[in-house]
Length: 370
Ligand code: FNR
Image (cartoon, rainbow, N blue to C red; front, side, top):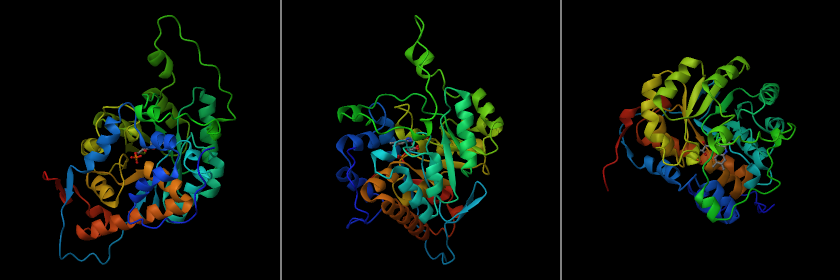
């Protein structure tokens, strides 16, 4: 395996969470970094995710007393100290030899909720043993329903508090940046959760059938499979990968516990809008009380503030988690979460917000051209 052993110390010169992105290329083989950093296709959506935060400015407010300020919230019936979750990311071994076990330990130390991926390098049982009480399991529906049911039973037995069904990545467009860097998934990067399930050979395509429609999309989740899932688990089901307001509305009606406004960090449909751009419309469609999480491009406390102002209750961290993991292991991820939390607190204090519910759309204005 080509991941360099990382020193378990915080490198000097880290002023903010975004510094982990700056240092990650030194900690990762070039191909691994390109695979993690890139989006699909030409990276249009991955870039749009980041650029969207620049379209908003935060309005400073003065003379407000924020001395009772805090960032606590209730999510999925649990009390959390801050609105940062670790997003599900596949193949943690690419970033660090301890992979998701290091992220789980960091989440526990920082009081953050960890969302473990179906495609993690460690099993969901091992991750649960390393994680704190707030852990959710991200589910990819398996071609064989019995395997999905087994994953659900394992997640319930291991104390996961929610299922996060990802619906936007049944098919990933080739990534120009990963290809250009010559990235190939190392042999040891296996999906540990799925090793026990014999994978049947894919049914050969009939004459005239499409490699996409009848091939890759054959087992993609549908509204029907969502209803099936809701009937087969006692855990709340969140749906991740929602951008369209009509989909969001229908998911609420269907009984999803909440949604994650996300475009998979720009790794799905290249050319789709930034997830931040759709967040206000999704919030308007589902109404004020419905749980909405957000991810895509969050790299700072100010970014999180903007997502909260535009309708999210909390944000998930994908790449930033992997960068911190690569740079300084569990310590790095815990440090990154601490920095983000303090950056959010500083932003709130200067914007006159003493609690998360004070972060309303009125705290922002469209960024004036520079
Ligand atoms: C992901 N993401 C992802 N999502 C998911 O539901 N299951 C998964 O297994 C993965 N795997 C994965 C691997 C890598 C390398 C990346 C970068 C992303 C998407 C992830 O959960 C999240 O939606 C995005 O990463 C959010 O964007 P940022 O924070 O990376 O900009």
